[in-house]
Length: 149
Length: 282
Image 1 (tube, each protein chain N blue to C red):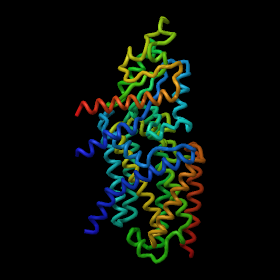
Image 2: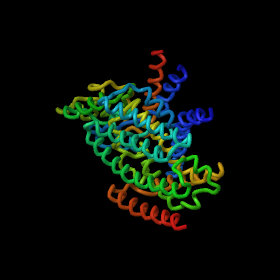
Image 3: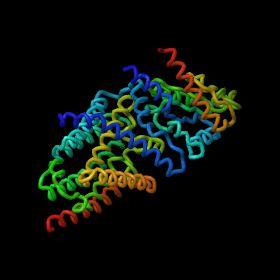
Image 4: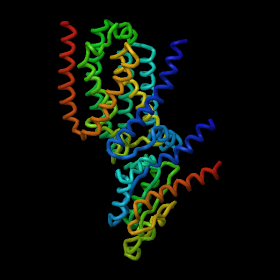
């Protein structure tokens, strides 16, 4: 039984299915995020695949500023993801609202709405930085698992 | 005792083989797309991870359907391993396929509903062809039993080459590979919405995945029956067939369900009739 639990724990780090949600970004971060999935960077070699469905996702990649209209969508998507889950905020807008942070319809960064595990700064961040962000998140997950035992 | 070992092999070795085939499949597909690709054991990591996730259930019907789909797929593989009746195998796997559709229909989500309807059309497309393949086997061996095939002195492929091609059509549809992948894509990374699998999550998605491995082994097992005389012949036939599936998957795009129904029934039924008339007259 113990061996099975160990294998499941190991598998969590080897198979993070990512869902990408564009929370009103300028498309810069989205293009860099999608570049990670192309044959050039090929994140599938780490077991990361892009799913379009929160029910299948382990990692939520959020780009763009959160505003009063899309905050409900963001929360809804987060709540539909089964545990354990990770949230990665990508780009200056996702971190704090960026240059739009004082606009009247803007709430701010992703962490105003849902708990964020990893922040990937940049405008836009490099694809390498985004891969790094997910790997960092997995390290955090592994640490949490260690504490839970 | 031998029967018990065969049942055990069907229950335990079949999903392991199915998972390995899925892993090799993903690796070769990645190489064909000039990518490095995931490790061979990736499908096992995926399924183990899904089992470790907290269940989020839409309704009890969906859970029931996931379990029945997995059970039916496992039973049909065990039946082919113990050499049971081909018609019985056919009906058991058909029950599994129908329960997958019912699981999709039980959730009110439009993606799940559309996926379920498309899956139903796929089932409708390949089931008559499989039945005709079994009729061809009956005409050559005089029995629907798998054990009767092994009493033949020469491989069935020599008498039923066209029916073998028809069976590979059924394999492509069953594996949900291009151009027949419209109920849900075989490759997770290609698909925005997962069709019939949209509302399955966590452990239940893992069950469906394992059932899919069983079904792969079932159809490949049926293919293997066509060269039962030598293990090497069987292995070469299966490797060639699966590689052809992969190539077709990578060089074709998704078509419409109308095209599938027209094309597969048109070409498939024509090949069935030609081959059946050939056996009947010859």
